[in-house]
Image (cartoon, rainbow, N blue to C red; front, side, top):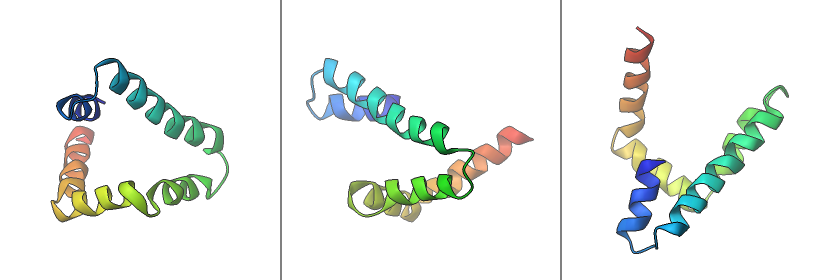
Length: 81
């Protein structure tokens, strides 16, 4: 949340806008997941829908190229120990 908010502010978006945008963005993603989490296969469908094309797809590609996703996995592994 902080990274998203701070990025928008650094790029000239007035303070009141990023707070609402970031909160509503994550709320929409989580709301879909909660409503559909019991339905087998639906969670994977939601991931696919959110990743398909556009900015999100490019962001995931860039994160992968920079090994951010592997680093995040390692952080989760360390947390579980």
